[in-house]
Length: 95
Image (cartoon, rainbow, N blue to C red; front, side, top):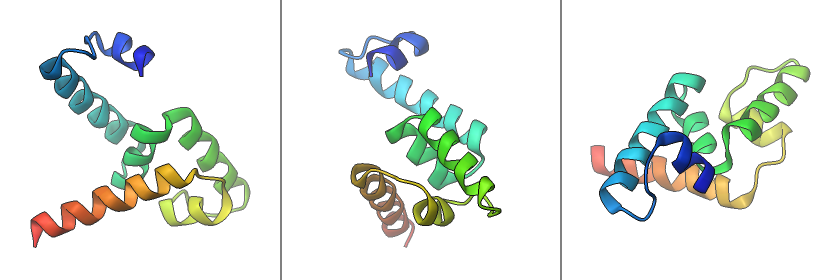
């Protein structure tokens, strides 16, 4: 996203800068959310959307986990697929 690229100080049309910026951004999401699946969701869907989903889950008296978010909050299909695909791929590479 242009705004995110600007915040990260990268030129999104430069492949090297794009990769470095993306790496920095996913690390920021890990620092913010402390959970791999939530960080991936924030990377794809935006941290504000994940924060709102967490608030909704907490309002229901549940722990803010990815599984609980999927049960309680609206999550776009694209984000559901993205998180699942990245986790699955990572698990395949580790096997």
